[in-house]
Each structure stands twice: as C-alpha cells, then as structure tokens.
Length: 270
Image 1: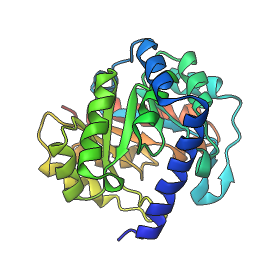
Image 2: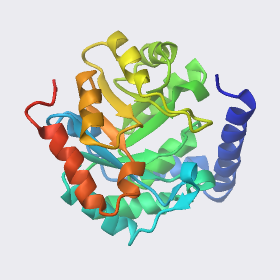
Image 3: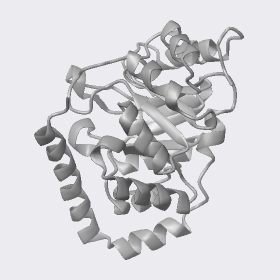
C-alpha cells in the first residue's frame, strides 16, 4: 500500500511548481498558446503501427539508482531512438526527481517525427495546456493520484486539444476507474509510485479486465527481448522502456534489439 504522506508530498511539490509557473504565465495565456500550437501527432496510431511497439523514455537521471545519465543532447538522443525504430519517444520532464524540463521535451520533439509522451505527474489542467505548448502529443494521468471528477476532467481537456490521454494504473480498481472516465489508452505501471518496488505480474492481472478496443501499454520491468515478449504474450500493444536504454553502453543498439523482438513473427500482436 502506498504511503499517503509520500503521495501527498509528491502532489504538493508539483502544485507548488505549477503555481510558480502560473504566476509567470497566466492560465488564460497558456490556454490560448496551447490552442495555437501545431496539431498533435497521433500517438494511438503510432502505438498500434505494427507488432509490440517500443516506447523509449529519455531522461537525465535515474533516481532509483541515484545516477545522472550522460547524454550528448536531447535532440541527438531522440534522433538516435527514432533511428533505432522506436514507435514513440517519451521525455521525462519532472524537475523535482529527474532534473527534467519542458525545454528538454521541446528540443527532443523538434528533432524527430515520432509522437512525444510527456513523462511527468500531471494533476492540474495548467500542465496539460503547458505540455501541448511544448510539443506533447500524449499526456499521462496517474489514476491513484486523482479523484474521479478530476480524472474525467483532465482526460476531456487533453482530448479537447487533440492529445491522447494515457491513464496509468496499478490495480484492477484503478483500471475500472480509468475505463469509467473514458480512457482509451491504459498503461499498467509495474513500479510503485513512491518506492522502488517492481511487480511485473501487475500487467497480466489487470489486462484481462480491459475491453479489446483499449490500447494496453506495459510500463516498467523491460530489460530484454524476453521481457518484451512476456508482456506481449499477456496482451501488451507496446512497452515503455527507460532505465534499460538510458543505462546501456549503446542506447541505439539496445533499442534496436527490443524493436526487433517486438517485430519478430513470433511476437503476439493484434
């Protein structure tokens, strides 16, 4: 069970950051800017392009290991990931734990043609408009951090901007809430939000309860092609991989190996 105090602390820190940014650029201004931004790329279609898709999360730090990642630039890293055949790129923008920024995502997205997922904890409408301004095509929503009315409102807001909402869940109950809120893309996260606990069996326990039309993403615990195939066998349309790629000696080769596993004829797919 998650620690309420730990979760509350995460949300409080994010809201404090949002308030500081809103004091600089008002909600009305960021909303207007987001609606003038170029049209989003179709993230859902990219996930379903072929086989079991690979989504690579690029980031500057791996807090679980207490390490910063040595990267040439976000533009070059994103280009490398696209060249290796990934279906989408996800950019970690959370400042508090990952030393990320919206600027990182902006630079990465300008360098590639793939859809971009913002990797941050989104709890406020301001963040959705802000993410659109900086090039996000898919926005994640941590169901356990959101009341049902807020979850519904944030999904509706993301979709009103042409973005795809990715509802992240960790229990069957959260999956039910995501479906009730209208989520069409659900990610099952194997990592606890407040600790380093990893549960790869989470995905297989939740996916059977999802309607066929819902896109399913497995987040966490993928290091090898065998891990990807195990998730695909359990019904994953795509996997999100971060640490295994970012800590690899050759991120491009590591990505290619996972992409090859996802495109192999033996890999289950829709």
